[in-house]
Length: 104
Image (cartoon, rainbow, N blue to C red):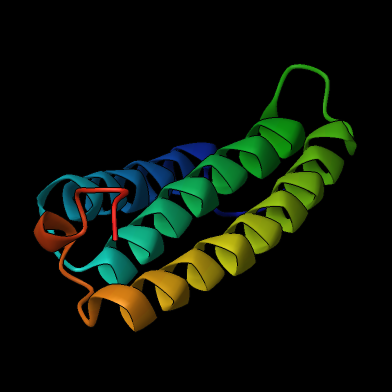
């Protein structure tokens, strides 16, 4: 087994998730909000890998699921960035308060 305890990984995941949650709820820049959501997804991936390695029945299932989540997060980031670029081209801002309408 590893010399690093599972609680260290879980604490790291908790810290990353809290930073991401804080950024997603308080920041006005849409790019920062997107990055904060990615931080929260990475915290979940750390938890998945930790529980797959240190859980009651260690197996590779959690790691495979984390890899699947990384792929979904990459696709989500690409779609999110495309939407942000489109909004920036039409509104000329990335401030979330100024992009609160779907009208042009």
